[in-house]
Length: 248
View: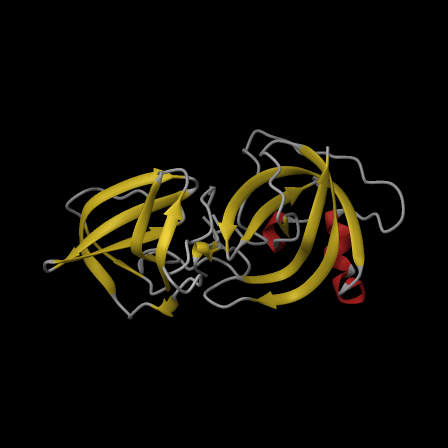
């Protein structure tokens, strides 16, 4: 989960759930006897004292003590210390959420977009990271040659022509810069090819897929373009490459 999450911020959530954590973790386990994951909006004001925290799979997990009642919150990576008083933005509550990276299941966990004193993530920044959500290391210069063949585009071209490409097939060649697994039963893969403008969030294209390429891979991704997708809870994207398949 490096989220996915404006939230599930992973597993849902997000993107994270997300890792909108957007995370390298699995989809939530269904409620026993129903096979369905129970989801509901968490109450406003997730405040409390930090009693436990850990980072894993692209998420920061925080257990809050709310005057005797304890609640788990997951968000994109943040710095937090035990004993700290903190308030998180509301998010989506998941039941029976399994974190593969932590090798544990949370009875209940809320996927939040972050503390209230932090700036909200930009649109599409889903803790899967969204269109802005992930970037290469500052010292890294990404330059991937354009894919060849029918329906081949650069990421910049997809953003520039997104309305006319909506619902159509597209193929890009790019570097995998972030992966958030198991959010809303999908894997969220962030792709960059060196084109586009980071300040306008047109440099990072998120693909949803049942496949899971590794970070750092140079891949040829093919899928269907979807424009202005809003999954709720902060999973909001200007452009997505849906049902993507990957070739190295």
